Image (cartoon, rainbow, N blue to C red; front, side):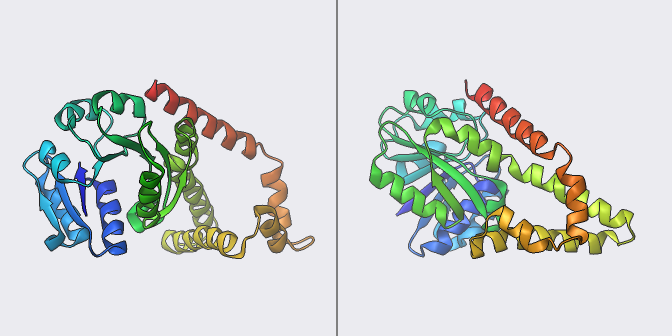
Length: 263
């Protein structure tokens, strides 16, 4: 089976690399205005498994599954070039609705994906939604592929805006928390390198502990909180603040903007 990528940037490289690791029989074909990007995608998959195409039209014609991995503002120029595509087409262009793609690709079965940047290290959190012509088999196939790069959850298209607020934009918000914890460590005497190492391990370890032990956040809070201890003292400051409201407003604003961009 040949998987095509129109656009060979960071996210395409991450996805292609994960797909290649999961299925040694997959072949790839890609097009990009920047030949260095195609070289990086080939390095991620194995150069012997990846071809560079002369045009976007060639990629579409030779792909069993076609990924549209270009920026949203570029997609309108790309769609007419692949208008004859009659197979499975997957768009990762943020904000562009399935109906917009289906209006040009009238023969294709379209699936839309909202991935996120941790896919670059195999820890993607993605949502994906079916177009009007996508079959259950198509959804199963793409779900399996996406799962090789991390977590992939099927949702209705209107919920992809929520996925954007939680996981698509979420890494930037989490990074701000990590930054703040690191600065607090430095302000209290740690070197930046030591504070960063401790904070990164704490965030990743907490997520892993919750996932692998099946704990709820509240259960973990109680596990760490000894009566009259350090955690309880710190929680008194955090939990008396409006942090939950701020996070809710952050996510809500992100979702609203996502909806505006896709309108």
